[in-house]
Length: 91
Image 1: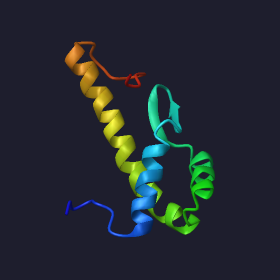
Image 2: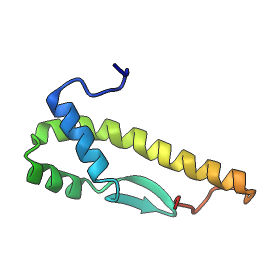
Image 3: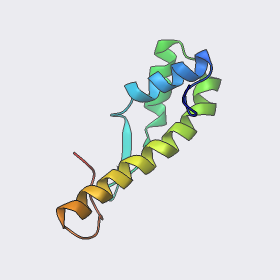
Image 4: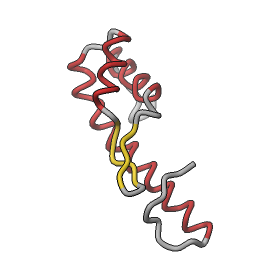
């Protein structure tokens, strides 16, 4: 088992929710700042995922996802030789 793998039914549901809501992000000044939690909660409700599970688990997933997305954008810009990564959202 992976260290960060969901270990409960709710955990697996919220992980699936995070993957489904990958396009529901908020951005500012070209940087991803988080999920649109209103949309995430609405999708979670539609799927029957307990709100308490979403409220407890999504912020941790969000934090890791935002860091990974912004880091990938920084690396993409650096490898392209464009200097600073300000104002860029990947692909």
